[in-house]
Length: 137
Image (tube, rainbow, N blue to C red; front, side):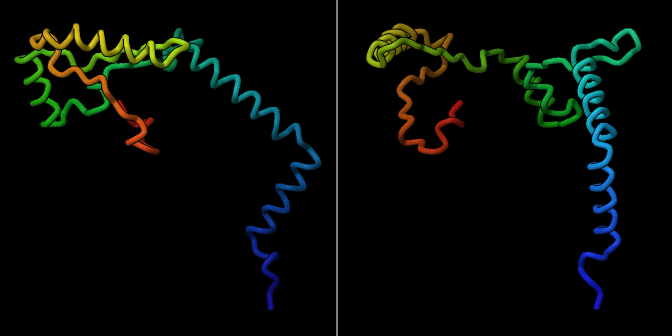
């Protein structure tokens, strides 16, 4: 019966392990070099050569392909009926009660402006959402 440790894969792992223990610089230095290379690419150091670095694109429309029919229809609809997507207000202070009072006063002032604000939602009970509270938009 053949030992389970005598397979070709096990032998290859033993060889790599011995190599790593005898010459650790052969494995660590290339990783450091690749890390520096990735940071330089991200920073855009290689732009003169034609490689562009990473960029932030905050446009949600770019998440869906331009060729998607439903997305084109949605964009045509938005062009004909423009409106603001979402507006989020974050209030922070040391006292939760002050936050609540401010939010309620702000919501009362925004409620009459139905032509600018379609829906004012300000009484979100996060306890009801449970574990999914962080998914709340």
